[in-house]
Image (cartoon, rainbow, N blue to C red; front, side, top):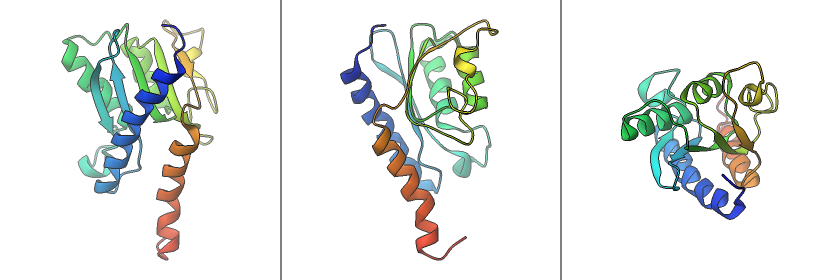
Amino acid sequence: MGVDSALHEAWMRAALTEARAALATGDVPVGAIVTDAVGAVIGRGRNERELRQDPTAHAEIVAIREAAAALGDWHLTGCTLIVTLEPCMMCAGAIVAARIPVVVFGAWDEKAGASGSVYDVLRDRRLNHRAEVFAGVAENECSELLRDFFEEPARRGVR
């Protein structure tokens, strides 16, 4: 897949819509979509850890599961994952396991990121699969959504 920044931006808008929807359940606002080889959305996800009381219900995992169900195959070769926050170690592992070749993300995660900041699982040459990574797409908007979420309790005096 060639680099198409306008397409990445459009896809990130869809992921941001998912991220905002996570706010309704009190979840950290992270959203993700998976597109197929022609760019059709085949999976959507948002953080649902609070909603499901499931520590694995990250936006990426939810979207990957939906995409695999849509295709009837866990091999997501030819797909692209777009997510508002840099994938963590668990999600990066799932991306590698699903054979997703392209990952686009918005905000960097300097504490738990595993796609270029703290770790770089997606491009680790020791693994059987690597992904092409496009970082910082709509970074300011993605970061602001997260920053507002984490600052809001402090404004209300909640710890």
